[in-house]
Image (cartoon, rainbow, N blue to C red; front, side, top):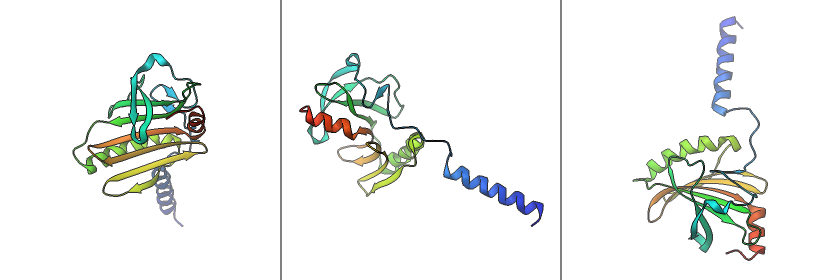
Length: 169
């Protein structure tokens, strides 16, 4: 093999590594927007309670670190111990599913620090990717319901179980 072919193969290998993403160790899923899963929720951030889908009670909050596409932020807290079991961010409304999915692809890159997002659903009404790490997960989805929105969800399954044990709805 000539020197030129070796350089071409090395460049091709580097391009494949770049497409595969960084080789660095992935971060543990901890939460976002200044709120950490499994930690006490700072009640000073609270702006009232709301009901999310599935009749889940959540607290609306204004994040310390908002993302530009998201406008509504909620935290699901264990009722007695006050620990964060889930975090939900909802985007602005989009005019079409392709527009939402285009933005989903951008935000998906932001979540890559936790691992490689896996496609979990793809229909004309919903596109969802997820990353799971043991008892924690992060989900990002575009959903066509009353409005076309993107939703980012962080969940700690152990904390959600504790929430149910403490009588949370």
